[in-house]
Structure formats: structure tokens, C-alpha cells
Length: 421
Length: 138
Image (tube, rainbow over all chains, first blue to last red; front, side, top):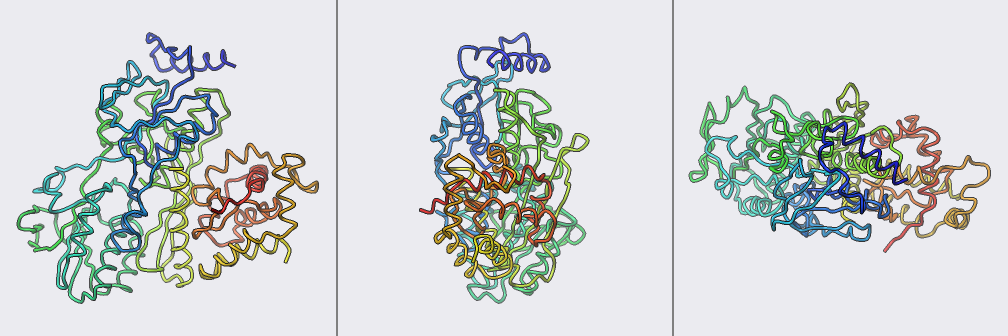
């Protein structure tokens, strides 16, 4: 069995063109998997590899946070549907044998197959999973910056930014103008900006606002679940939301975080709250390691999520270019199960099956009014392609929308149990 | 009510009626499991003769592997938070219901999309695996 595993490994190394490296430094011990990033992608891989290999693979999860706040359902916190504490989760993965290192991974040495941590420690790996999520491009909106995000928050990575946006939202008085600058494709959570608009509108409506409005300046011609959102805004928040496509605003010329203004090609809007959701790219460590292409995200093999740049590395979740799959927690969790299977196949010779991916994204529009979009996906002609898809329909019954709301809340409990415990 | 009908009703109810009703029925299912179902579970969890003789035996190990997709939504503990629990069902019921989603006789598009890719063997495997688990409601 060991001989088979070694041969498999050597073949991998040969294919990789890394035969010169003493690849079997693990010969005395167990094969080692290092996972960078403890979100729904990385934590799921770590858990399933450790659990299903029953100790045969040494699994280390590198994630600085001890309590992970989920980006998914953080809009529900903004909208008063959830508490802050309910979207934070501690890890309980030791039971499966996952070793957790609460540090930032600083760099990947692909030649030596090592990950350097913030404190200088180096972790050797036989296979590496890179799941750092996204970084924000602070230069993508003129006048905006990381410093400006203290006045005009992005709240697109959960944490203090989310709480800052909530504080600003709750402080608004009637007659306020909110401007959201929506992101260009591709970005984390395609329906997310529009669900956020719905959640902000819900808070304003709940406080009895009659004159406040939300203006969305969008660089895109269309967006996810557009007809459903627009129908919902008309039904629940008539006259409150104004969505502008590029034809209508002509582009963002500048934002001024001191004056709280947003200037487009056509007008300058004086706002009380500006939410800038900028362009995005794969997390820094993936970029520094040369795992990205010209898009700023990581190309992968559709059949197994293996990096096209390095056969010892898998990239999944928001950092990866996953074809038709959106950047979502559900997608990341689904990809993670494929990766866990493939890693075990490579390192211990366990059975593997053709990759099957799935996704569903739920979006809350108003209390008991939730819509969803999703599908299943397979590797086809080198790309992850949608094999079957579905989306909620316009004018669905309140009963169905209520059921979808329950499903959304149930999914959240399900996925966090699956990822973190 | 037979166990099969009880579960069919749960799924149907969750499909069309409000959460309050669904919760009541679902909780009813997992806490007041009919005696026949409880016996089937004991047989299944004992690891001997894990399936009734009339059914083709599902490959529990394959089922455990395939189950990773299901547990993104359906909690292994059998807990109900808005998505119906699927642990501890009689295998034939599980096979029947998942088969109906695959045949698009049941409505939920998420479940249709999930079910359509499973073969008979895989559905039987999932039924064997989930059927072997007991709800763990804290």
C-alpha cells in the first residue's frame, strides 16, 4: 500500500516536472496537507480530508481568526434579521485530527513546497490548498482608498467594516440618501449587493422613513436575479430604490469621503451613507505565489480544482476561476468536497469519482420573502459548466417565498455546522 | 399512520405549508418516531442486515461519501432549522422520495437539481447511510 502511494506520488512529481526536488521528504511520516484559509472552502477541505483519511494524512489549517464571521448572511445582520453573534463561529475541527494554526500565512515557496507563517515558521506540504478568498482593489474607484473606507465602508469582508456600515445605517434620519457603488464582475456573491440594498431598505422602512432613498451606481448592464429584486423593491419599498446602469450614470468620476459626495458623469450626489463595493481579486498570498492569471483570479482544472500553475496546489472558493459557478459559500463548500476527495486520492490512493459541483444562493428581499438561484455543474471541455439551473419566478406565492425563507435560514445552520464543527 | 406516510407528509408539508406546521410535524417525526421505524433503525445501526430483505442493499460507505453534498443543508444531527431532517428514515422511503425528486414529481428545484444526477445505486447508498444514523437533538 505504501509502495503504491509512493509510486503515485512519484508519478505526480514527474508530471509536475519537479523531480529534482527531494519530493519524498515525507517518506518517514504521513503525507502532509496544508490548507490556507479557514472559510467555507478551506475549513471544509481540512475537515473532510482529516475525517475521511482517518489519520492517514497530516492536516494543518492556517487561519488567523479564532472566530470566523461569515460573509454569507452578513447582509441579514445589516437588515436586523440576524444578530452579530449569530454569524460568528468558533472552530471545532480538532475532533477530526485537524491541526489549527491561528496565524497569517505570509508566503508560499512552491520550489521547496513550504508555507511561511507570520512568526517565521515554515510548514512543509505534499499538497497545498489555497483558499484565501478575495482582496479588494482599493484603486478601482477614483477618490476612494483603504483609508477612505473608514468613511465610506465596503463591508465586503466581514468584520469591523460590517459593523461600521450597520452603525451608519442605523444612524440615518428620514430624508437620507444612500449611495451604493456596485462592483464589476467577477466578485464575491453576485446577488449580494442587491440583497444588501433590500436589507438597508428594510431597516429604513422599519424606522418609518418616507423620504430616504437608495441610489445604486452600477458598472454592470444587468445583475443577478435582477427582475426578482426589482419586483421586490417595487412591492416592499416603492420609490425608495433607484438602480442606475452605466447608460444612466456614465461612470463614477470621483467619490469624496470628506464631503460625502459621489460624482458621476451626470451629477454629484450628496449622500449620508456611501457603500463602495470595489473590484476584487484573489487574496494576496495567491497573487504573490503566481497562482493568478491576468484576471487577478486563479485558473484551475475543472475536473479537480487543481491550480493550472502548480500541480501540487489546489485553489478553490472565491479566489478560483470556477467557470459557471459563482463566488459563493455554497459553491466553495461544494468545491471543497471535490478537492478533499481528490487530495485523498492523490495522497493515499483512495477512490475518486468524477467531480460534481452544486450551488444555491438565497437572497432575502423582505421578511418572509426570499428568492433563490442555483444549479449543478460538471467539468466540460476543460471548464466548469452549468448542467442544470433554476431561479425563483416572478409573482410566486407568499407561501413559496416563506418556504424559501425557511430554507435559507436552514441552509445557514446546515452549512456552518458542516464547515466549522 | 405508517412511517412511510408520516415522512411523506413531512416532506409534502414542508413543501407547501408554513414553517410552523412544518416544524411541528418535523419535530413530531424525530421525537415520536413510530415503533416500526425505531426498530428499523436499530437493525440498521447494529451493522447486521442493515436493510430489510426486500430492498437491494445500499452501499453505506458509498453513501457516506456521497452524503457530503447533502449535509451542506440537511444537518447530520437531524436538527430542523428550516430544512427537513433526513436521518433515520426507513430506506425504502428515502429511495422513494429522492426518486420522486429525480423524476421531477416533487417541486423543490434545489432537490430536483441535486437528485437528478444520482443513479439508483447511489440513492440506495444514501438511503443506507442516512438510514443508519439516529437523530441527535441536543
